[in-house]
Each structure stands twice: as structure tokens, then as C-alpha cells.
Length: 261
Image (cartoon, rainbow, N blue to C red; front, side, top):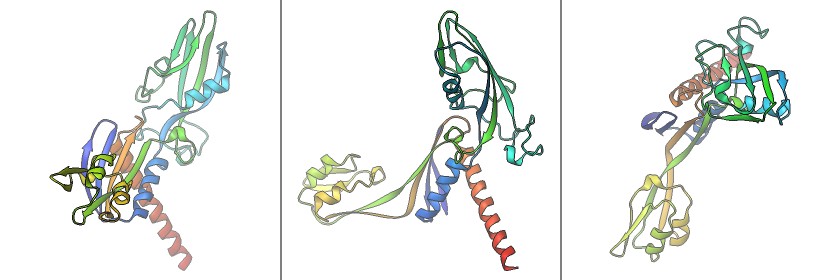
């Protein structure tokens, strides 16, 4: 496999990958999106709620608030030494107390661990009128995106890098250049030329218009995109996803060896 980082930002990562099959790329995508643990609120105990929203609605909103995640300090409950009973290494307490009139924001959530806090502090939870109050205690735990979307670390997707071939002088070259949604082509002096093949989104509009004079081919090169929701840096999502994939493969190989023996 050949890997090259093309673009790296705070919450986005674009990587060029060559030498692998679509099946392998899709497996990586699934592990990054659904097998990388993040922190999210799982249980909420309400002490007081006189807002317009039911307890269940507020609990649902709290669960979907992305939380900064420290994977070095916490374990999945299923892998914790307490065996899922609940301890400081697998559970975190977050409190919220707001008196109206005021809008309760994610920034009003008080975490016992300063490293684990809302990614977007200005996320509104509920608007309180005069005389309305909200007080609760929530428990945040590590979880996986395959169990619930609130634990998904971000969006992960890939696409083939196309190779475009032009045979001769297509009769509708001007139309092809104008109607390409990604502006892949230029039409100059009666000739259709490829301006930016990597911008192609494989819609095949050019192929349909050219009656086969333009061919869009794909091989084993891909763009891999990772867009973090903010709980983890995109680089960590990739690393942890590959580690989870490797561990699963090793477990499968061991299982096969045990069966053979």
C-alpha cells in the first residue's frame, strides 16, 4: 500500500491511497467510522426540570453533544478492570444546573475531567423562561459508533481516482466541458482536454455525451477523506481505526488456528 497525505487540517484529513482493493478500503472506512471509541453521555439523572421539554428529549440532546475524548485515561466498560461495574477509568460525571430566564448551552455542562468537555460550547440545549429551572447529573462513557451514532467519531468516505481517456476529437466537446459538474475539462481551439482529472466525481456525464469517445477508468488508487466531529483529531481516527482492524484480523487468524488444532 502507498499512502500520501494531501491535506491536513484541524478536523479534516485527505489521503491518497494506492495498491489496495475497494473491499479493503471499505473495511478501513467502516472501522474508522464505527470501531473507534469516543466519549458521550449515556445516562442522565434529573434533579429538577421545569422546562418546556420532557426529560427524555433533553437526555437525547445531551447524548448527541460531542465531547472531547481522552483515550489514554478511559476504557470501554467491557474492557475495564471493574468489569463494567463503573469506576473512574470508565465513567465520568457531568453536571448541569441552570436557572431561567436563560438558555442552557453546552458550556454550562460541568465536567469532573477538564480534558473531557463539549466540542462546541455554544450548542443550545433548552431555553428556560422565568421560573423554569434545570438541574441534572449525567454519566459519560466510551462507546462505539456501531452501537449508537452518538459515539461515531466523524464522517469517513473514499472514492476512486479516475483516469480519463479521450479518443480523437469528440463531436460534442464543447457541451462536455460546459456540462461537467466538476469542471474537469477545457475546450480550446476545437479540442477537448482534461484540465483536472482528480476533480472527477465519476458521474459519467462526459461518457454519455460523447458516445464512448471519452472513457472514465478506475484502478486501485483512491482518495480517503476523514472529517472529525471534534472528539478526536482525524489522524487519531485513522490510527485507532487501523489498530482495531488489525486486532480483529489477528483474532480471526488465532481463531482459525485454534480450530485447526
